[in-house]
Image 1 (cartoon, rainbow, N blue to C red):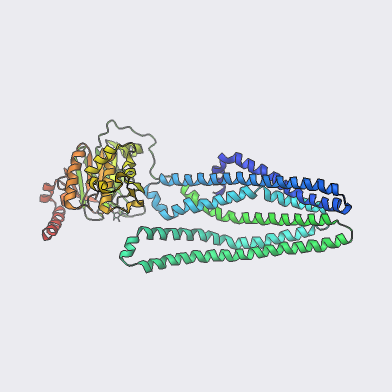
Image 2: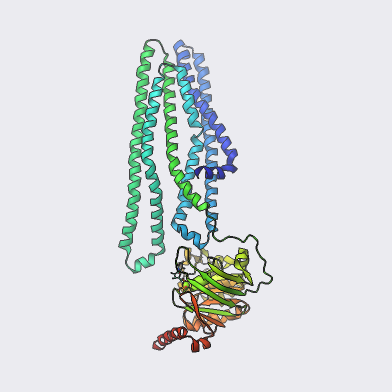
Length: 577
Ligand code: M5T
Ligand code: MG
């Protein structure tokens, strides 16, 4: 997966990568040239007292050093550009994919892990690409070139290279192998922290209300401790790594000086060669170390790449039809034909054999106890889920044959738990129709009985809305969502218990205004309060996923025991009040 991802997402940046390779090649060759120039100055210039030669070679050395620095910087610049662009594209890829998910697909993963995958995981892969670009070329060339150059300086000291390099690889490799599983578990621990944090922030009121802070703090503390433990273990291995590498470098230096010194003493080697040999050995060891670090990042990044790949590979369970049908008319007639539906993974269907028709200009109300399947029934029309059997038709066409825009353009749903986006009131109202005029917004607000409180706000339509709409009351949020639906002027309105947070008087006013505004539209209302639904053209009584009775209020009062019970329970409640 790692390779596939890198290949797919780095394609647009091949010119950058080519530049990186070129500049690194130049900088590595320059770096390899420097010690041998140094040796020449000492051996030819200093030993013969040839000042002229020293100046000339010194100047050359300065030039090479400048080239080395300049090319190295340019290489890193292009490398960073390519790596960051790669990360951006990958993040965008994950985001686009998640946006195409249906409710079912999101549930398969869960929100917290989708967030980690889109951020932290992408970052890990991006980091590997960055390091890869910065060291991929330099490391092997430095290694091989260093060995060749060192051997050119002195063959008989070569055994020092053959000893120190494997020792370094063994030590760093051992630590890397110990580190890999730790990195892997770190990623899941981060997922967990994210999940708990998210849940607690969203559920903060419930936590407060039930005085669960100690318990929740403990739960978070546990996850936090686990992450800390893993990080500490990783840290303690790293702590070992640096002294170990340092020791190998220093022992190698001492050995070169010791054995080389003897050869210089014996006149078999020149001092310049000795220093050059030492520098090459250090360059080789550094390169090996970098290579091993890189190798260490690969397992972690590949765990992350797999997790990203899982998201990218999902075929959204609800997709556009292959041969979309264009409806002959767009009046907003809704028909459910023998619809059954079960949530993914559930054994029992939540809806069975649902059949009804809602004509334009009609209001269909759905009542039933909690858990009867009212929300599930509504969510089939905007295709939040697809039916298991049967058909849902919009203007005579099965919705599975309609393009998504055909459905979203004609159906507006006010969900049971209304949601507002961070931004302004205006921004939320224009969500479904960006080109709406201010007058249209105010009209919608007036119908939704929300105009007064928006007008009372200091900034009116420009008032800030916090993420999720938490800075307005539940009833205000409901009314803003209703207004948002009105702005789009759909043919079909779905109100899922959208009047529950309103008092009886406001509810009545809202529905009266709504009736005038939605005269030609199809309205499907889920309601608990009998007063909300009593004047509907057709009332469906839902029980346990089945329509048990249907008719108008008056018909049902006579024929339906379930409906009578609902009415009675509310009458007594109101009478008592
Ligand atoms: C009907 C189950 C739920 C209930 C039944 C939303 C949802 C519901 N269910 C799931 O298994 N997964 C889900 O994602 O389906 O639920 P509903 O349609 O939400 O019922 P309702 O709208 O009539 O109830 P309420 O409380 O809103 O009046 O068994 O467990
Ligand atoms: Mg519901």
